[in-house]
Length: 327
Image (cartoon, rainbow, N blue to C red):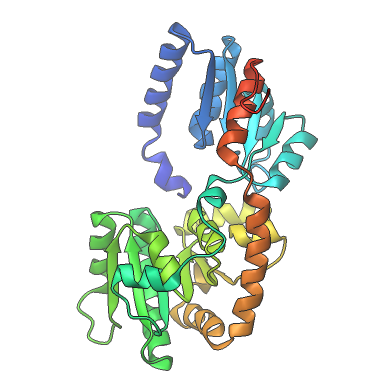
């Protein structure tokens, strides 16, 4: 989200958290599960844990990437950390935090193969044409920063790949309006099929995807779609991030593989011609795309782990109750 973007709502969020602490200490649950949002939930969990409430945190914070100092708080705040990725369980265990890899729910939901023709039919796209999906993010700030280079990349690509179609799923009407504002009435902008929602269908219909770094990149991996990852932050947020982030990649596919599977074009590299050329590389080289899909299938198999059941079993274990699979 960026730092300055979050600070604007700090006092509002702090007030909400204080109210929740009072509520749950006054009427304590048997166990509290904080889901994601570590900057909000970890201090809430710490207060509840000190008051004797069992706590589980689901979807571990990325302390392996930055802000490692939060491990001290995590050790004091949670009885178990549930992780979505296998390397996270090892990381937390090595640092004295009880952790359990449960798998990723999306990996259980999304099948091994998806019907591209059916997805295109649902969106009114003809079979046999090249389709590129553009996903500029779920927040208005992301759409504002990424719409222009993505539209420019589409223009660059269309000039070299006549007949390519573009589909752009936006998270809500406000994001769509922002994308349209940035696109403006430009006569040379390629035709784009704008959607509200339906991001998974758009990616399933595509031959290649250009997307903002985040969970969408994992979804594209599970759909076995070649992708180019991009992102832009405000100058101050980017400068701070460059000083504190200590992982070699931003995108989940590359982090999970431990190597660069897909291009990452971030901040000043998020230029139309670079983004367009990276997409063109996939469209022009089917063998490269096929090799990438094979690697995506391997990762999908690791993440498919009956995550919901394993998470429930982990919670029951913390409470000292029989697990769902126990006889």
